[in-house]
Image 1 (spheres, helix red, strand yellow):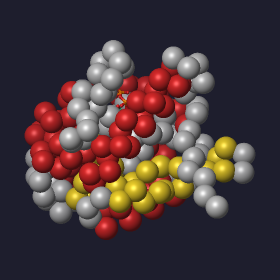
Image 2 (cartoon, rainbow, N blue to C red; image 1 turned 180 degrees about the vertical axis):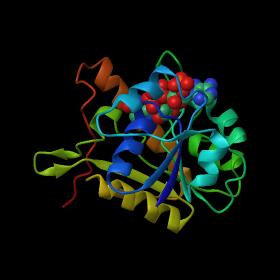
Image 3 (tube, rainbow, N blue to C red; image 1 turned 90 degrees about the horizontal axis):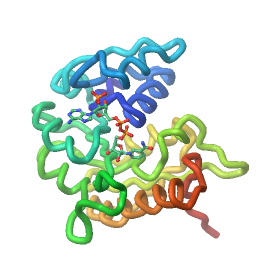
Image 4 (cartoon, rainbow, N blue to C red; image 1 turned 90 degrees about the vertical axis):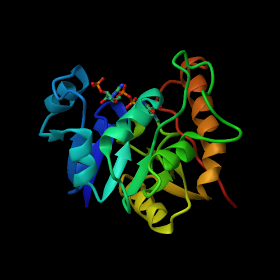
Length: 210
Ligand SMILES: NC(=O)c1ccc[n+]([C@@H]2O[C@H](COP(=O)([O-])OP(=O)(O)OC[C@H]3O[C@@H](n4cnc5c(N)ncnc54)[C@H](OP(=O)(O)O)[C@@H]3O)[C@@H](O)[C@H]2O)c1
């Protein structure tokens, strides 16, 4: 699959590298291909990332991943241009810079705002509750870590779920995009447990059923 990735940091860089290793055709959209984060990605053993503008990455991908800080997301999507008909995976979290809370919530979510900024894209929330450091190994003993997937577009849900499953995660269909209002706060809990609770960045969320 052709995937354009907006951002080449912890999330975009790691997911892009893992998907490239799985055979997908990846183009990273970045503001500066020589930034420290982009260089770190280029230095990863056995990986030769391709970089372009946000618009080039968006044009390249039948699926596009938004993986930039929340405060940069609207501007980056504007630079990305027309995303009509494309699956737009949103892994962002609208977290305040000091990690103390969410910049938006309750009555909207990052995912719903992104759907407003990219009105003809098929937005799907996914991967926002997984730490970048855990992306390359979704196994926890007998369990696969869960990722919550919500969207108003069935094909977008299917695409994100398959991409998550291909990395070993268990995708959980959480319903329509509005459910992002409840999935995004879960990411903040994850952050507080990982950092303040000292559980560390390899923790993951699992939905148990019987
Ligand atoms: N890190 C995690 O474990 C994690 C987990 C789940 C979700 N998330 C969410 O995923 C998103 C990305 O997080 P991350 O940890 O990957 O961030 P990151 O490592 O800081 O990478 C951010 C990327 O966005 C670019 N960027 C930053 N500010 C920009 C701006 N103003 N205009 C254009 N590009 C800009 C950076 O480019 P430069 O290299 O040029 O700075 C970099 O490529 C965030 O919304 C975050 O909340 C993160």
